[in-house]
Image (cartoon, rainbow, N blue to C red; front, side):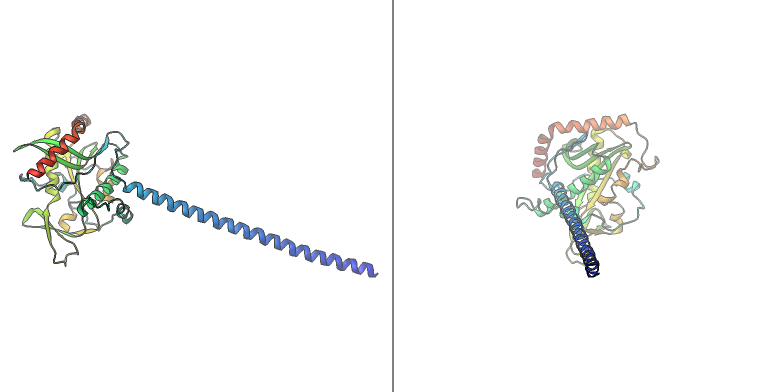
Length: 320
């Protein structure tokens, strides 16, 4: 009888011990699984950070030749462009196409702006040059996305006949679309920008906002870009309404309503350049696409002598 009792006790003890061991092993595997999940999450987060840093470095690198068809890039000129002495017409195409558009606040991606700071800090570049280059890089990025990296010319020099003889002008971006050619001037400012009602050729920048006492008057990019559009029209023979000058304002800046209704922010370029964003025929008339291709071929012809034209442009600026 005693042996039977001892056997029952032994079996009970073994049962309890086995349960304890089972729960210990189960807890061990649960802990291991949780640690494995945490390690996987940490590796994934580190991988994303690495990719983000890599993308930012690639975005901030100097402009390289675009890989898509008919897409070219040249180094930005480090020379400041002078105010033109010509008489300018109001930018009919731009003011008509974008008239009445609701003004919007600055919506530039902050990461886009910050991604250029490291590579643009070279001492040989002035602050204005670095900011200008950053603005062109930001705008070029958006243009490539909208146009699938096709039909784009960046920082191109063209030679045209002006009333005072042959001149060379530099254009930030030229974009081919089915209904014409966009001529894009990029500016990168901060502070508050307003226009002078008494002087259509001038804008005013106040670095710290409208209340700032500092005021810097500069030549209107709208008028400057209209000169570029006129130059393209003279060498391509396209109708004026099929050449669309567009001023893109990058940087953290606010504008008065007059300017805001006549410029475009980088992140809204899709609303202008997308294939489904054609303006009404009453504004931009139909044009045979063969004519656009012929005009584009003329512009591509200037690529063969960019170095020569750049030197002429430098001498032209030094002369003024």
